[in-house]
Length: 475
Image (cartoon, rainbow, N blue to C red):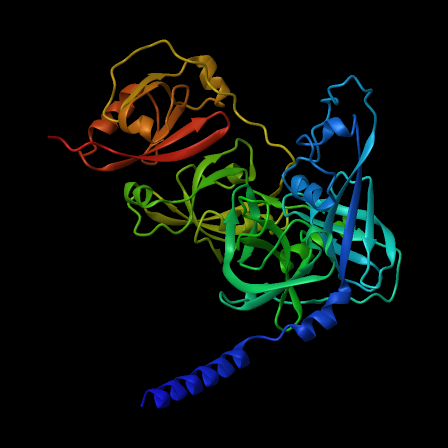
Protein backbone atom coordinates (compact mmCIF):
# COMPACT_ATOMS: atom_id res chain seq x y z
CA UNK A 1 0.00 0.00 0.00
CA UNK A 2 2.85 2.34 0.91
CA UNK A 3 4.69 1.56 -2.34
CA UNK A 4 1.52 2.30 -4.32
CA UNK A 5 1.08 5.63 -2.53
CA UNK A 6 4.71 6.65 -3.20
CA UNK A 7 4.35 5.70 -6.87
CA UNK A 8 1.15 7.76 -7.16
CA UNK A 9 2.84 10.80 -5.56
CA UNK A 10 5.80 10.46 -7.95
CA UNK A 11 3.44 10.48 -10.93
CA UNK A 12 1.62 13.56 -9.61
CA UNK A 13 4.90 15.39 -9.01
CA UNK A 14 6.10 14.53 -12.52
CA UNK A 15 2.85 15.65 -14.14
CA UNK A 16 2.76 18.81 -12.03
CA UNK A 17 6.35 19.63 -12.87
CA UNK A 18 5.71 19.12 -16.60
CA UNK A 19 2.64 21.37 -16.53
CA UNK A 20 4.50 24.13 -14.68
CA UNK A 21 7.38 24.03 -17.14
CA UNK A 22 4.95 24.50 -20.04
CA UNK A 23 3.46 27.57 -18.33
CA UNK A 24 6.80 29.34 -17.93
CA UNK A 25 7.76 31.83 -20.66
CA UNK A 26 10.57 31.16 -23.10
CA UNK A 27 12.86 34.19 -23.56
CA UNK A 28 15.27 32.60 -26.04
CA UNK A 29 13.69 34.08 -29.17
CA UNK A 30 13.45 37.51 -27.55
CA UNK A 31 17.16 37.41 -26.64
CA UNK A 32 18.19 36.33 -30.14
CA UNK A 33 16.08 38.90 -32.00
CA UNK A 34 16.36 41.92 -29.69
CA UNK A 35 19.85 41.49 -28.22
CA UNK A 36 21.63 42.98 -31.28
CA UNK A 37 19.75 46.28 -30.85
CA UNK A 38 21.04 46.77 -27.28
CA UNK A 39 24.34 48.62 -26.86
CA UNK A 40 26.95 49.09 -24.18
CA UNK A 41 27.79 52.72 -23.33
CA UNK A 42 31.09 53.77 -21.80
CA UNK A 43 31.44 57.33 -20.50
CA UNK A 44 34.67 59.19 -19.88
CA UNK A 45 34.71 62.35 -17.81
CA UNK A 46 37.76 64.50 -17.13
CA UNK A 47 37.94 65.17 -13.40
CA UNK A 48 39.99 67.98 -11.91
CA UNK A 49 42.35 67.08 -9.09
CA UNK A 50 44.55 64.18 -8.10
CA UNK A 51 43.01 60.84 -9.05
CA UNK A 52 43.99 59.06 -5.84
CA UNK A 53 42.58 61.84 -3.70
CA UNK A 54 39.34 61.88 -5.62
CA UNK A 55 38.38 58.28 -5.04
CA UNK A 56 35.17 58.45 -2.96
CA UNK A 57 36.60 56.12 -0.29
CA UNK A 58 40.25 55.28 0.38
CA UNK A 59 41.42 52.11 -1.29
CA UNK A 60 38.38 51.87 -3.58
CA UNK A 61 39.26 50.75 -7.14
CA UNK A 62 38.40 52.81 -10.22
CA UNK A 63 35.49 50.56 -11.23
CA UNK A 64 33.40 51.81 -14.21
CA UNK A 65 30.28 50.01 -12.94
CA UNK A 66 30.71 51.62 -9.54
CA UNK A 67 31.19 54.94 -11.31
CA UNK A 68 27.81 54.53 -13.01
CA UNK A 69 26.18 53.79 -9.66
CA UNK A 70 27.72 56.86 -8.03
CA UNK A 71 26.88 59.02 -11.05
CA UNK A 72 23.19 58.12 -10.62
CA UNK A 73 23.32 59.82 -7.25
CA UNK A 74 25.40 62.75 -8.46
CA UNK A 75 28.67 61.50 -6.94
CA UNK A 76 31.20 61.16 -9.78
CA UNK A 77 34.05 61.62 -7.30
CA UNK A 78 35.19 63.64 -4.33
CA UNK A 79 37.15 66.46 -5.99
CA UNK A 80 39.40 68.94 -4.37
CA UNK A 81 40.64 66.81 -1.47
CA UNK A 82 44.13 66.02 -2.63
CA UNK A 83 45.87 62.80 -1.70
CA UNK A 84 47.11 63.92 1.69
CA UNK A 85 50.82 63.50 0.86
CA UNK A 86 51.44 66.83 -0.83
CA UNK A 87 51.26 65.48 -4.38
CA UNK A 88 50.27 68.12 -6.94
CA UNK A 89 46.69 68.22 -8.21
CA UNK A 90 46.18 67.05 -11.79
CA UNK A 91 43.38 66.12 -14.14
CA UNK A 92 42.42 62.48 -14.52
CA UNK A 93 39.79 60.48 -16.37
CA UNK A 94 36.84 58.90 -14.59
CA UNK A 95 34.89 56.16 -16.35
CA UNK A 96 31.39 54.79 -15.89
CA UNK A 97 29.15 52.36 -17.73
CA UNK A 98 25.57 52.23 -18.93
CA UNK A 99 23.31 50.70 -21.54
CA UNK A 100 21.15 51.92 -24.39
CA UNK A 101 19.17 50.69 -27.37
CA UNK A 102 18.92 51.62 -31.03
CA UNK A 103 15.60 53.18 -32.05
CA UNK A 104 16.44 53.91 -35.71
CA UNK A 105 18.72 52.16 -38.19
CA UNK A 106 20.66 55.39 -38.85
CA UNK A 107 22.18 55.41 -35.36
CA UNK A 108 19.84 57.15 -32.91
CA UNK A 109 20.06 55.58 -29.46
CA UNK A 110 18.03 56.07 -26.29
CA UNK A 111 19.58 55.91 -22.83
CA UNK A 112 19.32 57.63 -19.45
CA UNK A 113 20.27 61.26 -18.99
CA UNK A 114 22.22 60.38 -15.84
CA UNK A 115 24.36 58.00 -17.89
CA UNK A 116 25.69 60.64 -20.30
CA UNK A 117 25.33 63.94 -18.44
CA UNK A 118 28.63 65.82 -18.05
CA UNK A 119 30.43 63.21 -20.14
CA UNK A 120 33.44 64.39 -22.12
CA UNK A 121 33.37 61.30 -24.33
CA UNK A 122 30.63 58.73 -25.00
CA UNK A 123 31.71 55.44 -26.54
CA UNK A 124 29.09 53.00 -27.86
CA UNK A 125 29.89 49.32 -28.36
CA UNK A 126 27.51 47.34 -30.57
CA UNK A 127 26.51 43.70 -30.30
CA UNK A 128 28.98 42.86 -33.10
CA UNK A 129 31.83 44.48 -31.06
CA UNK A 130 32.14 47.55 -33.30
CA UNK A 131 32.77 50.77 -31.37
CA UNK A 132 31.66 54.33 -32.21
CA UNK A 133 32.03 57.70 -30.57
CA UNK A 134 28.57 59.10 -29.94
CA UNK A 135 27.22 62.64 -30.06
CA UNK A 136 24.77 63.72 -27.36
CA UNK A 137 21.76 65.15 -29.20
CA UNK A 138 20.11 66.23 -25.98
CA UNK A 139 19.09 65.09 -22.52
CA UNK A 140 16.25 65.80 -20.13
CA UNK A 141 16.98 65.50 -16.42
CA UNK A 142 13.33 65.66 -15.39
CA UNK A 143 12.50 62.39 -17.13
CA UNK A 144 16.07 61.02 -17.12
CA UNK A 145 15.99 60.46 -20.89
CA UNK A 146 18.83 61.17 -23.31
CA UNK A 147 19.17 60.81 -27.09
CA UNK A 148 22.58 60.10 -28.58
CA UNK A 149 23.71 59.44 -32.17
CA UNK A 150 26.45 57.37 -33.78
CA UNK A 151 27.62 57.61 -37.38
CA UNK A 152 26.41 54.25 -38.69
CA UNK A 153 23.71 52.81 -40.94
CA UNK A 154 21.64 49.66 -41.43
CA UNK A 155 21.67 48.98 -37.71
CA UNK A 156 19.28 46.59 -35.99
CA UNK A 157 16.60 48.49 -34.08
CA UNK A 158 14.03 47.70 -31.43
CA UNK A 159 10.27 47.58 -31.87
CA UNK A 160 8.40 50.12 -29.75
CA UNK A 161 5.46 48.78 -27.71
CA UNK A 162 2.59 50.32 -25.77
CA UNK A 163 3.28 50.49 -22.01
CA UNK A 164 -0.37 51.35 -21.40
CA UNK A 165 -1.24 47.77 -22.34
CA UNK A 166 1.02 46.32 -19.66
CA UNK A 167 -0.69 44.48 -16.83
CA UNK A 168 0.54 43.97 -13.29
CA UNK A 169 1.86 40.41 -13.08
CA UNK A 170 2.88 40.31 -16.76
CA UNK A 171 6.29 38.89 -17.62
CA UNK A 172 8.97 41.36 -18.75
CA UNK A 173 12.69 41.15 -19.47
CA UNK A 174 15.66 43.51 -19.45
CA UNK A 175 18.83 43.42 -21.52
CA UNK A 176 21.84 45.50 -20.56
CA UNK A 177 25.39 45.55 -19.22
CA UNK A 178 25.28 45.13 -15.44
CA UNK A 179 28.77 45.69 -14.04
CA UNK A 180 30.02 45.75 -17.65
CA UNK A 181 28.76 42.25 -18.50
CA UNK A 182 27.42 42.99 -21.99
CA UNK A 183 24.08 41.69 -23.28
CA UNK A 184 22.95 40.23 -20.00
CA UNK A 185 19.26 39.28 -19.87
CA UNK A 186 17.22 39.22 -16.67
CA UNK A 187 13.49 38.62 -16.30
CA UNK A 188 10.63 39.17 -13.86
CA UNK A 189 7.14 40.57 -13.68
CA UNK A 190 5.49 43.97 -13.60
CA UNK A 191 5.02 44.77 -9.91
CA UNK A 192 3.08 48.03 -10.26
CA UNK A 193 2.26 50.74 -12.81
CA UNK A 194 2.11 54.52 -12.59
CA UNK A 195 4.45 54.57 -9.62
CA UNK A 196 5.29 58.07 -8.41
CA UNK A 197 8.78 58.55 -6.93
CA UNK A 198 10.03 61.48 -4.85
CA UNK A 199 11.06 64.46 -7.03
CA UNK A 200 10.21 62.54 -10.20
CA UNK A 201 6.92 64.29 -11.01
CA UNK A 202 6.87 63.78 -14.77
CA UNK A 203 7.27 60.01 -14.99
CA UNK A 204 4.65 57.33 -14.14
CA UNK A 205 7.25 54.63 -13.48
CA UNK A 206 6.79 50.94 -14.25
CA UNK A 207 7.88 48.97 -11.18
CA UNK A 208 9.25 45.46 -11.74
CA UNK A 209 11.19 42.81 -9.84
CA UNK A 210 13.59 42.35 -12.77
CA UNK A 211 17.20 42.24 -11.59
CA UNK A 212 18.66 45.67 -12.46
CA UNK A 213 22.18 46.56 -11.38
CA UNK A 214 24.74 49.33 -12.03
CA UNK A 215 25.41 49.27 -15.78
CA UNK A 216 21.80 48.36 -16.67
CA UNK A 217 20.76 52.03 -16.62
CA UNK A 218 19.44 53.16 -19.99
CA UNK A 219 18.75 49.65 -21.23
CA UNK A 220 15.39 48.44 -22.58
CA UNK A 221 12.56 46.68 -20.78
CA UNK A 222 10.76 44.24 -23.11
CA UNK A 223 7.36 42.56 -23.02
CA UNK A 224 7.04 38.96 -24.18
CA UNK A 225 6.26 40.12 -27.74
CA UNK A 226 9.77 41.57 -27.94
CA UNK A 227 8.57 45.18 -27.81
CA UNK A 228 10.28 47.85 -25.73
CA UNK A 229 7.89 49.14 -23.09
CA UNK A 230 10.34 51.05 -20.89
CA UNK A 231 13.85 52.31 -20.13
CA UNK A 232 15.43 50.88 -17.00
CA UNK A 233 16.29 53.89 -14.87
CA UNK A 234 16.36 53.37 -11.11
CA UNK A 235 16.54 50.77 -8.39
CA UNK A 236 15.79 50.79 -4.71
CA UNK A 237 18.71 49.20 -2.92
CA UNK A 238 20.44 49.20 0.43
CA UNK A 239 23.39 47.25 -0.93
CA UNK A 240 23.96 48.90 -4.32
CA UNK A 241 22.69 45.79 -6.11
CA UNK A 242 19.27 44.47 -7.07
CA UNK A 243 16.71 43.96 -4.32
CA UNK A 244 13.71 43.30 -6.55
CA UNK A 245 12.61 46.94 -6.75
CA UNK A 246 13.36 48.34 -10.19
CA UNK A 247 11.79 51.30 -11.96
CA UNK A 248 11.50 51.92 -15.69
CA UNK A 249 10.45 54.99 -17.68
CA UNK A 250 7.46 54.17 -19.93
CA UNK A 251 8.63 54.16 -23.52
CA UNK A 252 5.86 56.51 -24.70
CA UNK A 253 7.19 59.17 -22.30
CA UNK A 254 10.73 58.56 -23.54
CA UNK A 255 9.79 58.69 -27.23
CA UNK A 256 7.97 62.00 -26.77
CA UNK A 257 11.05 63.42 -25.06
CA UNK A 258 13.41 62.04 -27.72
CA UNK A 259 11.31 63.53 -30.53
CA UNK A 260 11.56 66.96 -28.91
CA UNK A 261 15.29 66.54 -28.31
CA UNK A 262 15.80 65.52 -31.93
CA UNK A 263 13.78 68.49 -33.22
CA UNK A 264 15.11 71.25 -30.99
CA UNK A 265 17.63 69.84 -28.53
CA UNK A 266 15.37 70.67 -25.57
CA UNK A 267 12.04 69.71 -24.03
CA UNK A 268 9.17 72.12 -23.44
CA UNK A 269 6.44 71.39 -20.90
CA UNK A 270 3.18 72.87 -19.84
CA UNK A 271 3.11 74.82 -16.59
CA UNK A 272 0.44 76.19 -14.28
CA UNK A 273 2.45 77.74 -11.46
CA UNK A 274 0.82 76.02 -8.50
CA UNK A 275 1.84 73.98 -5.50
CA UNK A 276 -0.18 70.81 -4.98
CA UNK A 277 -0.48 68.06 -2.40
CA UNK A 278 -2.19 64.74 -1.86
CA UNK A 279 -5.64 64.72 -0.27
CA UNK A 280 -5.61 62.67 2.92
CA UNK A 281 -8.70 61.36 4.68
CA UNK A 282 -8.35 64.11 7.31
CA UNK A 283 -8.11 66.83 4.65
CA UNK A 284 -11.09 65.39 2.80
CA UNK A 285 -13.12 65.47 6.03
CA UNK A 286 -12.10 69.06 6.75
CA UNK A 287 -13.20 70.14 3.24
CA UNK A 288 -16.42 68.16 3.37
CA UNK A 289 -15.32 65.89 0.51
CA UNK A 290 -16.64 62.36 0.05
CA UNK A 291 -13.42 60.99 -1.50
CA UNK A 292 -9.69 61.66 -1.59
CA UNK A 293 -9.56 61.89 -5.40
CA UNK A 294 -7.95 64.94 -6.99
CA UNK A 295 -5.00 67.28 -6.48
CA UNK A 296 -5.31 69.89 -3.75
CA UNK A 297 -4.02 73.32 -4.75
CA UNK A 298 -1.88 74.47 -1.83
CA UNK A 299 -0.59 77.67 -3.43
CA UNK A 300 -0.80 79.75 -6.61
CA UNK A 301 2.11 81.81 -7.91
CA UNK A 302 1.38 85.46 -8.57
CA UNK A 303 1.10 86.18 -12.31
CA UNK A 304 1.26 82.47 -13.21
CA UNK A 305 -1.16 80.86 -15.71
CA UNK A 306 -3.13 79.34 -12.82
CA UNK A 307 -3.79 82.74 -11.22
CA UNK A 308 -4.75 84.27 -14.56
CA UNK A 309 -7.14 81.37 -15.13
CA UNK A 310 -8.84 81.78 -11.75
CA UNK A 311 -7.38 78.87 -9.77
CA UNK A 312 -7.27 79.47 -6.02
CA UNK A 313 -5.58 77.82 -3.06
CA UNK A 314 -8.00 75.27 -1.66
CA UNK A 315 -9.35 74.23 -5.05
CA UNK A 316 -9.29 70.50 -5.76
CA UNK A 317 -8.48 69.70 -9.39
CA UNK A 318 -10.40 66.59 -10.45
CA UNK A 319 -10.05 66.84 -14.24
CA UNK A 320 -7.54 68.54 -16.51
CA UNK A 321 -8.27 68.82 -20.23
CA UNK A 322 -10.79 66.01 -19.91
CA UNK A 323 -8.33 63.68 -18.17
CA UNK A 324 -9.22 62.52 -14.65
CA UNK A 325 -6.87 63.48 -11.82
CA UNK A 326 -7.13 60.70 -9.24
CA UNK A 327 -4.02 61.58 -7.23
CA UNK A 328 -1.82 64.64 -6.98
CA UNK A 329 0.99 62.80 -8.81
CA UNK A 330 -1.24 62.54 -11.91
CA UNK A 331 -1.43 66.31 -12.42
CA UNK A 332 2.23 67.23 -13.14
CA UNK A 333 2.42 64.53 -15.83
CA UNK A 334 -0.81 65.65 -17.50
CA UNK A 335 0.07 69.35 -17.36
CA UNK A 336 3.66 68.72 -18.45
CA UNK A 337 2.44 66.83 -21.53
CA UNK A 338 0.16 69.73 -22.53
CA UNK A 339 1.46 72.05 -25.22
CA UNK A 340 2.25 75.54 -23.87
CA UNK A 341 -0.25 78.10 -25.13
CA UNK A 342 -3.16 75.67 -25.24
CA UNK A 343 -6.33 76.70 -23.39
CA UNK A 344 -7.86 73.73 -21.57
CA UNK A 345 -10.89 73.14 -19.32
CA UNK A 346 -9.99 72.46 -15.69
CA UNK A 347 -12.65 70.98 -13.44
CA UNK A 348 -12.30 71.83 -9.75
CA UNK A 349 -14.16 71.47 -6.50
CA UNK A 350 -14.29 74.81 -4.67
CA UNK A 351 -15.81 74.80 -1.20
CA UNK A 352 -17.86 71.76 -2.09
CA UNK A 353 -19.17 73.07 -5.44
CA UNK A 354 -18.07 71.93 -8.92
CA UNK A 355 -16.62 74.60 -11.18
CA UNK A 356 -14.97 74.58 -14.63
CA UNK A 357 -12.18 77.03 -15.44
CA UNK A 358 -10.55 77.68 -18.81
CA UNK A 359 -6.81 78.07 -18.31
CA UNK A 360 -4.14 78.85 -20.89
CA UNK A 361 -1.15 76.65 -20.08
CA UNK A 362 2.24 78.37 -19.87
CA UNK A 363 5.73 77.02 -20.56
CA UNK A 364 7.59 75.60 -17.59
CA UNK A 365 10.45 77.91 -16.56
CA UNK A 366 13.81 76.53 -15.56
CA UNK A 367 13.64 78.21 -12.18
CA UNK A 368 10.79 79.68 -10.19
CA UNK A 369 10.89 82.77 -8.04
CA UNK A 370 9.91 82.05 -4.46
CA UNK A 371 8.64 84.11 -1.57
CA UNK A 372 11.19 84.88 1.10
CA UNK A 373 10.50 83.53 4.58
CA UNK A 374 9.03 85.89 7.12
CA UNK A 375 11.22 87.08 9.98
CA UNK A 376 10.66 85.83 13.48
CA UNK A 377 8.14 87.74 15.57
CA UNK A 378 8.43 89.04 19.08
CA UNK A 379 4.79 89.11 20.20
CA UNK A 380 3.68 86.41 22.63
CA UNK A 381 -0.10 85.96 22.59
CA UNK A 382 -1.75 82.95 24.22
CA UNK A 383 -1.62 79.43 22.81
CA UNK A 384 -4.80 78.70 20.81
CA UNK A 385 -6.79 75.48 20.55
CA UNK A 386 -4.42 74.14 17.89
CA UNK A 387 -1.32 74.65 20.01
CA UNK A 388 -0.22 77.72 18.00
CA UNK A 389 0.99 81.12 19.10
CA UNK A 390 0.16 83.51 16.24
CA UNK A 391 0.43 87.21 15.47
CA UNK A 392 -0.46 89.49 12.56
CA UNK A 393 2.15 90.18 9.90
CA UNK A 394 3.98 93.48 9.67
CA UNK A 395 3.56 95.62 6.51
CA UNK A 396 7.03 94.54 5.36
CA UNK A 397 6.11 90.86 5.75
CA UNK A 398 2.87 91.41 3.84
CA UNK A 399 4.79 92.95 0.93
CA UNK A 400 6.90 89.81 0.76
CA UNK A 401 3.64 87.89 0.35
CA UNK A 402 2.55 90.17 -2.51
CA UNK A 403 0.09 91.95 -0.23
CA UNK A 404 -1.58 88.83 1.14
CA UNK A 405 -2.68 88.57 4.74
CA UNK A 406 -1.34 85.90 7.03
CA UNK A 407 -0.41 85.05 10.58
CA UNK A 408 3.13 84.43 11.72
CA UNK A 409 3.73 81.33 13.83
CA UNK A 410 5.61 82.55 16.90
CA UNK A 411 5.48 79.14 18.56
CA UNK A 412 4.00 75.68 17.89
CA UNK A 413 3.08 73.18 20.58
CA UNK A 414 1.00 70.02 20.99
CA UNK A 415 -0.90 68.84 17.92
CA UNK A 416 0.45 71.66 15.74
CA UNK A 417 4.06 70.79 16.53
CA UNK A 418 3.40 67.09 15.99
CA UNK A 419 1.94 67.91 12.56
CA UNK A 420 5.19 69.63 11.58
CA UNK A 421 4.25 73.29 11.96
CA UNK A 422 7.12 75.31 13.35
CA UNK A 423 8.16 78.80 14.31
CA UNK A 424 8.50 81.13 11.31
CA UNK A 425 5.76 79.43 9.27
CA UNK A 426 2.91 81.62 8.02
CA UNK A 427 -0.74 80.59 8.27
CA UNK A 428 -2.59 81.77 5.15
CA UNK A 429 -5.97 80.12 5.54
CA UNK A 430 -8.32 78.00 7.62
CA UNK A 431 -10.73 75.55 5.94
CA UNK A 432 -10.66 77.27 2.54
CA UNK A 433 -11.09 80.74 4.06
CA UNK A 434 -8.23 83.21 3.67
CA UNK A 435 -6.85 84.77 6.82
CA UNK A 436 -7.75 88.45 7.20
CA UNK A 437 -6.57 89.09 10.74
CA UNK A 438 -5.77 87.33 13.98
CA UNK A 439 -9.16 88.39 15.38
CA UNK A 440 -11.04 86.96 12.40
CA UNK A 441 -9.01 83.72 12.58
CA UNK A 442 -9.73 83.25 16.28
CA UNK A 443 -13.48 83.79 15.75
CA UNK A 444 -13.54 81.21 12.96
CA UNK A 445 -11.53 78.74 15.02
CA UNK A 446 -13.84 79.20 18.02
CA UNK A 447 -16.82 78.21 15.88
CA UNK A 448 -15.33 74.77 15.07
CA UNK A 449 -16.68 71.98 17.26
CA UNK A 450 -14.32 69.96 19.44
CA UNK A 451 -13.12 66.75 17.83
CA UNK A 452 -13.45 68.14 14.30
CA UNK A 453 -10.52 68.36 11.86
CA UNK A 454 -9.51 71.69 10.36
CA UNK A 455 -7.14 72.35 7.45
CA UNK A 456 -4.55 75.07 7.85
CA UNK A 457 -2.89 76.50 4.73
CA UNK A 458 0.71 77.04 5.83
CA UNK A 459 3.59 78.68 3.95
CA UNK A 460 7.23 77.92 4.61
CA UNK A 461 9.80 79.69 2.46
CA UNK A 462 8.33 79.45 -1.07
CA UNK A 463 6.21 76.35 -0.44
CA UNK A 464 2.60 76.14 0.73
CA UNK A 465 0.89 73.11 2.21
CA UNK A 466 -2.45 72.20 3.78
CA UNK A 467 -1.96 70.67 7.22
CA UNK A 468 -4.89 68.81 8.83
CA UNK A 469 -5.25 69.33 12.61
CA UNK A 470 -7.82 67.68 14.86
CA UNK A 471 -9.20 69.79 17.68
CA UNK A 472 -9.03 68.11 21.04
CA UNK A 473 -12.34 66.82 22.44
CA UNK A 474 -13.57 68.79 25.39
CA UNK A 475 -13.51 66.86 28.63
